[in-house]
Image (cartoon, rainbow, N blue to C red; front, top):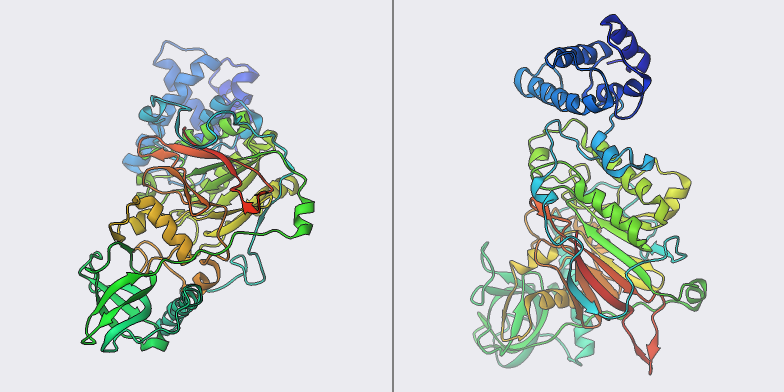
Length: 566
């Protein structure tokens, strides 16, 4: 369809002798805007208006009457699409959202993706939600902290492990042989085993299947004896290649406490009299990596000494029954009000699990929806000066479904916008000031929670899972991975492991939100911004950008944290 102009519409109105003024034709809430939104030509829109006006006693063409007319046109267009299919579901040439304009009333947010579905209506349940802005969880200094940032902060934001072989460079993924996968897993067993051996002063590891009457110490990876869920009777220990590489059943009845999951590298002490079953009597705790220690040069670079506010939110950014991005619009409003120094946004931005996405009931390409979504965030927060970090999700329908996942590619950002936008892979370690943030959008908490077994530990499940991640030194220590995770083991070995223990670990999950201090690392699940048809939660932290030592001991840089209802 050729581009429609205001002059085309005026000519058609003159043909029907319909009185009008320039405002009703030219402005954003006008006939022209409806032409562009509904992909109608000048003649078609005027015919629609003529029929609408005639059925209502020759209603005059005014801005007030255009609001009611727009509703009628939307229904008419939808009937054509779902009934006779005469009009194709293709991308409008100049799409604009009137709802976005009305809600945000800001020229910088005209691209706001308020709706990308031809039949979308605002979610009533989301609009009627209660408890907006309610703090549902607090951590650290409850009294005193002010939850406003400075905006335009001089705080430094950068990825810690960028290099020549980063995920940004072009590469072929999922091209891996079983032998390569085995080598990656074997190397992980040997590396963690060597750390445990030197820490606990173990002389050597014995073959796990060696029949002996004396107590021996063995190294291996926990496995399940079937395709079902792990339980205390189905635990196998797979030894590394140096210890014979055998699989042996493990009897856990002699252990006073344990917490195990498939893929966990463990050191056990016990006996194997027959060589057929290992009876474990002691399980050695894993050892986390040290925390980040900045160089003197970097400490001098960071002049920011006041607390830095970091906000985090995880998609989906639409209610489940509608493709209206109302929750995202509300989040942008909060960013502009609170002026966080850094805002970390996790995908999915275009959710592959959304019903209308699954059924392809959209009027634009997935890439265009994502582009407009990001443009709205970048433009809408420009006045706040907030530094933005975008982390993809395997549920982002327009992006690569692999783990580790490369960052988004945004080629249309201006120079000023690029300076305040960081495109991060999943997972990654981010440096804000001199504070390290471990980030992953993959729901490892949910995946491990479904597989982990424990007895007598005296700790709750979320703390155990976070501790496993830190002591296994991996952003995804579960093996085999969940069915929805397409693991590229070559890249996982390079980019899925922790090179240090992060000061703060952010792990958004479907499970209940939490903020916990686990062996010195503050672990945060901010929840998701929407929960089905209703609003969800987001998180915010106050951090000291330059961690300090008190009496020679490290003090956590996290001053306070909150989880808040959107």
